[in-house]
Length: 461
Image 1: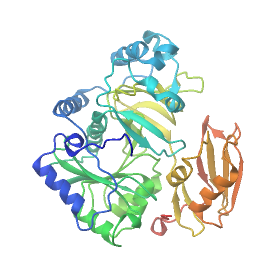
Image 2: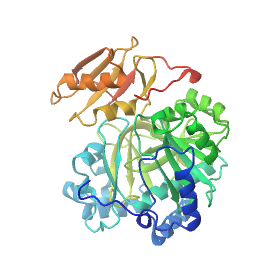
Image 3: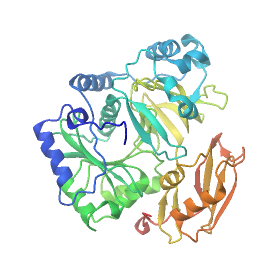
């Protein structure tokens, strides 16, 4: 690619030791390893790692968020800085000491001008960008910093500790493996400095990503990771492999994990499933240990808002809004997430209840195999669609609704039939203002009944 310089090993992993390099080579050159298509590293310098460890200490010593109408001091200081230094917030005005009167923002604002969220004083030396394919609609790039991903591991460790599980890390072992179940996905192996040189592997369970039929199961068994991280659909695909090893836990995120599937996964993998509420824009927010989700991190302020942006009473459902400063390139001030829940206090800690996030939708193609809704996003990502929704009827036919006519219907039809099958029945219609629930568009829905756990068969077109 013209004008692009790829990072070398020293830049990808500044703190990589000889032992870490040996582990990395083992993961990359294992006889059953996948056909990796990417190289990645945590990019942590010694100074960054020190800050990440200090962050872990802060989290361990922090007090839980108070009532919704009580803003912690750090929130007021952060809001004041945003109003002075961040172009997007500065031009809209307002006062930090009148926090709940400040205008809210949303993903649409990020899509339109993410550069306007970078503070004036923020140096660009450590800026990184990563692409999110999205689970609910339009994909886009996120501006971020190397410390953000490692600080996610800090919060993950803390959440697992609530289950009595210790994410140990350490040299010479693989700590985390992330399975994907998509047509294409970035796959790589790397080493985490924060986890003391432990390995991390991201694989795609599409058979085309492996050299031989049984390579995926043999490689994953040989890695014997401490935990698997993924989404409900990828765990369904993972459960079809004849694995002999068992992890300490499964960590599910990106989509809502339904109770019945959670129970099935726990029985199959013989371990607890931790359901994490996390967004690409903010990363880790809360973790569910049962019915409710406990807000784990100390550096996020959670509000529950009505459609006019006012705080809902304790226990009343509304839209989740976040204020957090963990990403120096993307400070979020009263950011409306598009997810819904109620906020209350349980055992002295704030929890989200009656949560409604991004629902996993498993469509079926003309052969009856499962199509991940992320596949649909990827199939349509090159089309300039403002908004769209896809619904599968009980008779397996599809209804695709879109706003505007910038893309000819025949191109959409060709893309979806390539994904679902040439004989797929499809209707294309206009999206209307009332095609929403709780004020948000449901991009993916289906009337098909859930398949029994053991009968799920993924399609990798």
